[in-house]
Length: 321
Ligand SMILES: Nc1ncnc2c1ncn2[C@@H]1O[C@H](COP(=O)(O)OP(=O)(O)OP(=O)(O)O)[C@@H](O)[C@H]1O
Image (cartoon, rainbow, N blue to C red; front, side, top):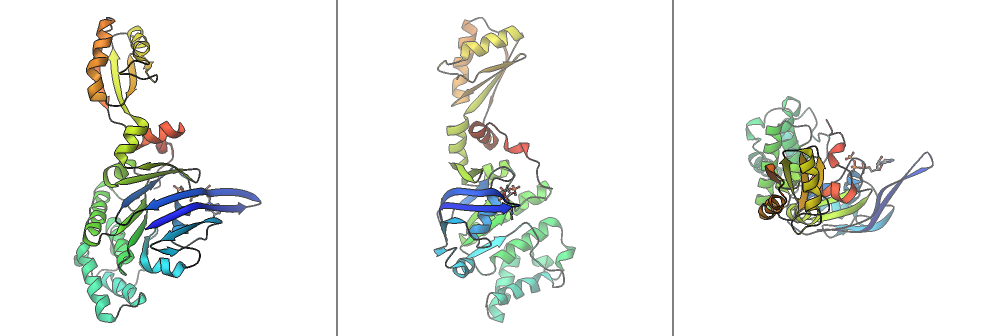
């Protein structure tokens, strides 16, 4: 559904070159739900803008829904939907009329446009709001209207730029329910950016992480966490001396790794499978007469994955408002 090769986009600002996207390769199969993650300035929006034909690449190629973004942008646009960060609805028309007008813009006959509007109002739980104007809707309701507007022409692929940003937790959960529901109803391929790592972890079946304009990790959230971050065991000991001894005793052992660190009376160790490793770790420390007071196993997050790959935290960046 998406195939990009060596995609590059350079901006020149006051004679200074910014390489926003540098040789990005990407393949997305039909029906996938892909979260595109990365810190501020990593090149996510630029990539999205190239794939949705809003911006030409400096070099490289991309085919989206079978059409080349450079030579057949109209073909791409006929097969995709794009829900950006800004509201797409105007203020004058009522919700249902907005949807019907959008359908007419895509060339649907009047009756088909009305039927499609009603179908989307039902799917996105907007039917009770059909007679309201967009300005009177809440943030979450408005975001659902944006989704509906992006779906009017039955796109095979929907691009969503930060679909849940700026919403309260309840509306964020609701918008995700609707995203999953529309996927179930239409089998739409979904490619979205988000700053909420827990959402990507829980909802996306595939996560693509970009940094400095390149893909640095690509896989299911579980694969990335298992392969690139590993579990963590956190132990506390009775004394700081014991913590230091524990960290060095576990370093390089079968259960622990060289990353064992002691801070105060806390010892942190990375291991591939923490619940299975814990009994062995405790036995090893017991044999050295090191008293462990508490023991906790922690599954890694996608932020741990990014930290392992880059030494930086994705959450160091300010979340957008
Ligand atoms: N029109 C432009 N002119 C000049 N530089 C640009 C332009 N658009 C983007 N950039 C630069 O390209 C780089 C990548 O920007 P981009 O918006 O793609 O990142 P992003 O990953 O979407 O970031 P964010 O998470 O903050 O939205 C940044 O350094 C940005 O300043």
